[in-house]
Image (tube, rainbow over all chains, first blue to last red; front, top):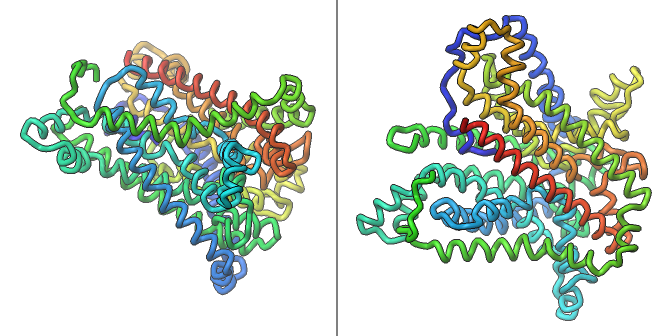
Length: 293
Length: 277
């Protein structure tokens, strides 16, 4: 996940003549690949195999179900609302943390990482405690006829919480590794603050931004635990794609459940592809001459 | 990095950007999390203890932490092996396999959950082959471990991989020149260097497994006292409108997360010191 940690990838393939005997190498590679095949490839293949078990027509029909379409719509709305706010936060936080030094900085970074270490179920629960009927704001919200829990706003809030660190934690190490010489030069040459950001900083971090956004988006669209606590599972109204998958599966409509799940698996594959490209681009910008290291 | 110790920064925007960071962090993360503690504080000590130490709850801790420990240990072994093979050896499709290691990060947990459950169930691809051997995976604690291994794998691989990449092979050559066998070199020279990263990866995988919900509940069977994980118990209490019980258990889970986060931070500091030497 951490690009900066990978930044000085040595291009040193085994130039060294110290290595294991060939049979050990083959054996270790076989065991590692076997483990990957068993735990990663097999499940991935199983999603698509079971989605298409009853043929293309059944597959497409499952995706065209009104409840499924409404789940897709809600998932898209959630991602469209969550990703930009966390993107904006990520960039601003990375600017403050990477470009300046101040006391308590590493503590602040730990706090930003916090949502990653909280169980998704607990992430959902805290919003129930605030906005639920028995919660802090519950009575007031009910008096004003505002629904947050078991409604769309709760889903969006819980998703913002669980996707909170993605962009920031990607940009902080990247911007720290780039230092601030280029920005200082731009300011000395008379550029304004925003001009410096958009003309100097942003081109340097754009692949890091893409990397953070794609991971943030994948989690926003795929979050299950937190959303399941606050959603209320109202069909056609408060079900996101992962919740729709759960409902179909629990009703024993396996083919339909896997058909809808295959959408999320495709999203995961696209995410991995974009992530690999972004990683490659980041490493490229970091090893070009003139940049640090 | 320590070059910039100037009192007055030249770059603009420090005040507003730090201010916004702290404001947004408080609104989205800190205030909601504090709700958990305030709610717990309204319980009396007896109520709290009854909620977090009931037999069914204690059994769920055993299932959750025990399975997470086994899964993290399995990942500790195979994750290091995968990282080693990816860094040191060449084979066709290596780039693809490398990218695929992050699949558990990218694949939504509900999808992983139903897929693993169907593969390992009695008429699934693997379940149908394991059943005649008397091995049941789905709907048993073993299934919980399988799901936890799946979601934890990338943590170990991705923390060990960069350390292996930066290892100076001259050290290995020196060890070999001094007469060490390959195994001795690995055991005495490479392994100690990798150890902080391995432990960090282990702790990250463990922490993730402890809180995991989506990929587990489909394969777990969810029998109280036997294969019921703590996050599921929180949801069960919520569905029974037992807010106090749910909150108390969640507080325990949150405290455990904090402890794990703290130890992971310390491990990372340790490995960084290792790397600098």
